[in-house]
Image 1 (spheres, rainbow, N blue to C red):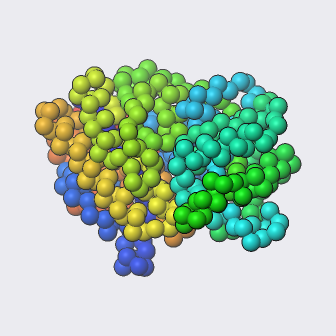
Image 2 (cartoon, rainbow, N blue to C red):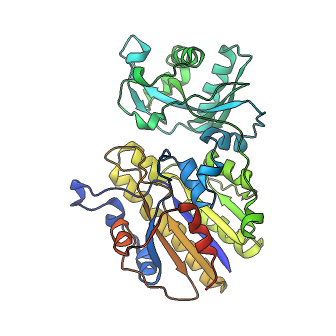
Image 3 (cartoon, one colour):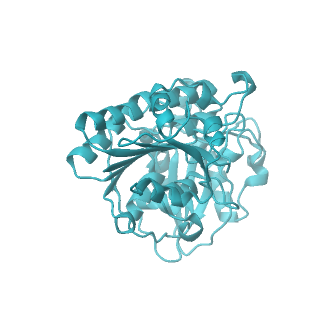
Length: 401
């Protein structure tokens, strides 16, 4: 038996007037999921425990079977694992986004946060900007590390864990009310704007119609996590397929093997089919029992407020990932169980995460289950099935009838 999770980051949404009171998932053309849903188990699952922040870090830990209340120590330490940063006891890490701030205001605190991702800046350009910052800052207790796209890392040696605001939660808002109380972190952010706003790379981006990556933004503080082995916990050898450091870091923390896919970007224009083929190769030729395919695109489109592109991301996932995986497993004659779900909602209208339960689908190639026509928020709720403790869902997936 092989097991596959397709994690569609931020896919769940809310009914929208412009869609006739339907959600983007209801509108999206998803023939593969439409074929599977009548013979699959549908339901809702609470991936974010009550009282915890609705982030991909907490939600993906939950989906992977790790109770966030027990194992979560912050977002950025998970990303540090992926980047290869070996944190010491007492070290505090922070996510460092390269963001776009408005430019007309004289005072830094009066600026507005326009884009948490600087138009999803490419990794090569981001590395140029990070290198400039490293050269300009003379830091003994702080160290910057390059990550992927707009997602980078700051480590504070023997630091303090500080509650900071995620930039995607304050899009279009004045930043003054959300800046760090810590003077050193705040000064670094202000100085980064002075350095980056006139950087040649950013001036070129503006000429090309792209948003400049003109400031650092710190958030997601935490300490080094201690996560038990996935294989020891579930007796499954597994692989992770993701373009983002957070998921790669979780994988390293629990002992899953990261598979790198050329063209996997974490954006709308990622290599969907390449991810599916990498999963099939691991399951059918490399003796893996479990594959976790993470797709960032729906979440990014939700943050951008683009309903059209969020729907397009879902349609790409259905055709190029779920369709490819299902066809490949059937052609190989392998029994398999498939779990499809978001980690959390990222509603287009508010452009940030919520903690609401999300719809899930479990398909078992060996038997028809009692499902409903169409996989979406509405049909999943109609089943009346709710998994309140999201970290238990994967054990349900692994159950043998």
